[in-house]
Length: 186
Image 1 (tube, rainbow, N blue to C red):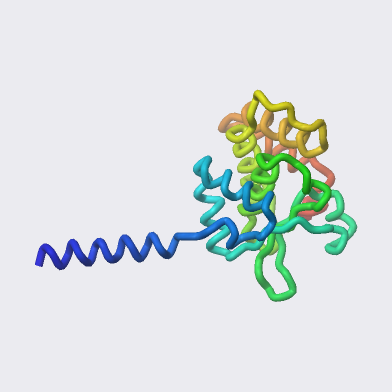
Image 2 (cartoon, helix red, strand yellow; image 1 turned 60 degrees about the vertical axis):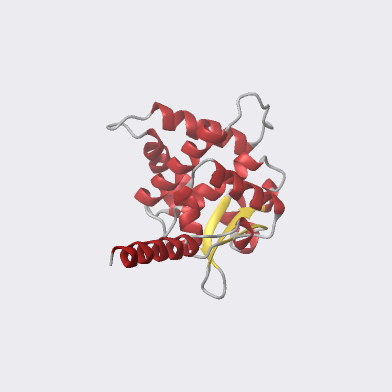
């Protein structure tokens, strides 16, 4: 009986491991995005990978003007394609951004699960983006002086300066005209 229980437990463990197995190429065929997903895995961002897998999310670089005028200024969006599947579209203007920065955008967008984000979800996603930048940023590398680098540096500063009673990331989102419009806070 003991052998049967051990065999059953081993079978269950192997089955579960297979259920959670994935390849970065399951999510994208773009080499830079695949490298960013691999970096997320190497840095222990299992929740990001779990979300990508759970929702079978495909990630790509895209011209966001096809979504709408306000999206052209976005760094990335989590949305649905015409088949109803979740996709993460990273603004194609950031195609040459460092892999660490692409990973931060993927981390952020992977946190979105609602059809329309609310302040709480946007705060969680933005904090995830900032925490990922804190973890992945290589201080011995000189990153390009770009809008994305400045955003990540600002968010990570707010994230690190926040405390339990004083969430600076949430305050920044709540006071931003872009997010107030997107989240219907006006």
